[in-house]
Image (cartoon, rainbow, N blue to C red; front, side):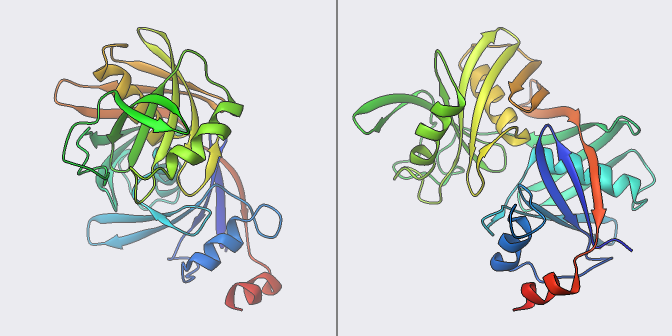
Length: 283
């Protein structure tokens, strides 16, 4: 019996711990130890589930810093593949309940791991983003950062994002701006950051700094947020291909403001924690 399974989605890697196979308290310290790439298994986070509650499948998602997050697009595709391959569901279309609500997963190509997730709706309302200041839509709002004025569009797709359109983006720019934007006073509970470059009317490129994880090769929720921001600003039309260092995702935005995301998820490893490592988790 395996105690954990590891998958990756466009270079975004997650460990699945199935409480039906191996139950472990998900304290912040335990999550950090498991996710540590030098002292633990190493990952961008932990997917803890499924919790079977009648007909409902519930998932908890943890960042590598030990915090629990509302939603992860790449994590949901990974988890959907695990749930389907582990025969917790019979249909290729099923619902997953997260802290941000319910999403619907559709296993398009089981062998290839191609999965479509209906991510729900989005909003630019500051109250839903838990932002400081008066209630408002945050569209191209000026944000002062160390004497520089950036125009930001902030969107929630179940978790908060700050999208910054720029002429040129890079990994170095993400490291420069990402942590300062993520912890800006406008975001008392921090936010995810996307630096975005528009390539054409159906393609954008992003660099990502994730709240609780830092620089990330790819992110499903970040892709959804950036595509929604670009769409609202009139820079692109649906569908939108989002290009990231780890690969590409296809994002669709319908007339009712609902988002779907299509991409792959691939298995990497199955394993068990050694008795020595388990002892360190308990200690």
